[in-house]
Length: 187
Image 1 (spheres, one colour):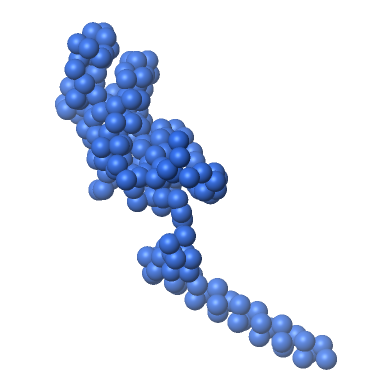
Image 2 (cartoon, rainbow, N blue to C red; image 1 turned 90 degrees about the vertical axis):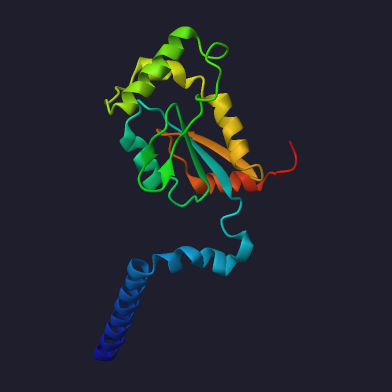
């Protein structure tokens, strides 16, 4: 009986290993298929609600923080807008929008803050590496309302707008569970 049980256990173990290797190959070689499974199985209810994500960064921010966001936290979100105080790119697919560019300098930014903004823009154009710190944070406060306007301009039909910064980590499962309890048409 023991050899029969051992043989059965070995067959189960080999079957499990074979299945595990097969799944691993699926994941490695056909990730697009794996990503489509939830919507194939659950239909339109998969990953609902779909937020429009707005990531706020800055010219002086450490680029690696935004790169980390794009490769981890918001990698699974297809609807992303990156706003900043300058125009720059991240990877192949993401370009920031300068949310301060269209603001009238004499009515919105203080003259001292406008100088910081222009200095950072000129440094970015010349390829000068900017240091994180007080100067960049001085103009950060001006981005909040313009980023809301840009978000609405870019996606008027979004059910939800989720705003985050380059040093923020979001657990999407928690966000989705929270938003499912609300009706988008009600204030």
